[in-house]
Image 1 (spheres, rainbow, N blue to C red):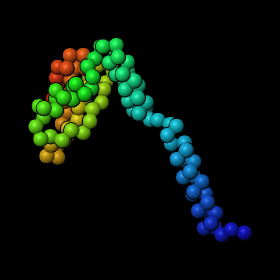
Image 2 (spheres, helix red, strand yellow; image 1 turned 90 degrees about the horizontal axis):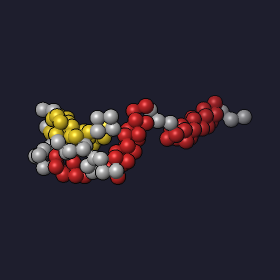
Image 3 (cartoon, rainbow, N blue to C red; image 1 turned 60 degrees about the vertical axis):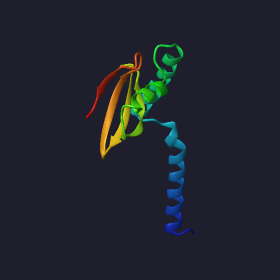
Image 4 (cartoon, rainbow, N blue to C red; image 1 turned 90 degrees about the vertical axis):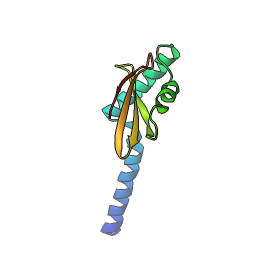
Length: 108
């Protein structure tokens, strides 16, 4: 008969394996929205309705000096990109109209 330790170890390994298999199949509402927004951005870009993310990045990066660029998100409802930076320990956001490239807001 296996020891309690062996049984617990097998149970833990089984639960971990199950979690690894099931984990990627489920998404939080925020993750699902982000995937939806990314798909919408691709669709709008192909249709010529919004600028490419790289074009927006090139415009904004040159204005941000020594701030470190962390990435961007696309908001399909607002049709806007939000670029995220960090400078001297402070997180900065730049919101840009995806259709025109015009800066909508910039945190200080």
